[in-house]
Image (cartoon, rainbow, N blue to C red; front, side, top):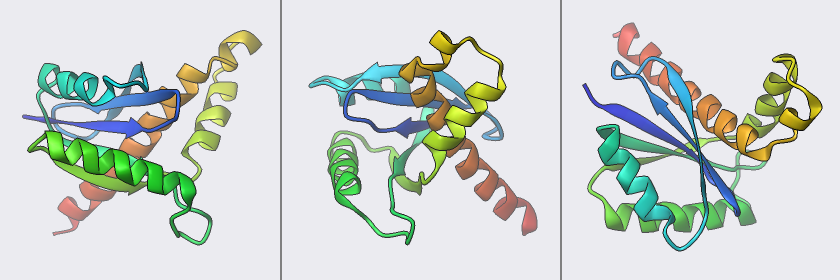
Length: 143
């Protein structure tokens, strides 16, 4: 069975999450630095984890509309699509970073650990991927 890779795109870091082979549970992998080799790093991960689909968080405003940041993410998605045959899906990522911060605080980590932005990025990727998996899992089981 193949997996799904979740991406929380950021200017400096990109949070990465991966599904289990049955595409039920998302797990944080880590983050990668956003640089000139970002897409190559992502494609390498897709091979290592036998990925069939990539889900990229699209930052929408409260009204569900695209803003300046979502245009940057959309450009990233288009570049990724040009370099792979994998299905690349946009997914609403509103509030994932906020939920990630709250989750990390509830985990009881020390202040220094809570301020580690890479943990927040990978947690946000996990939350958005889990949201995608839950949505599709429910659709599959309702039929």
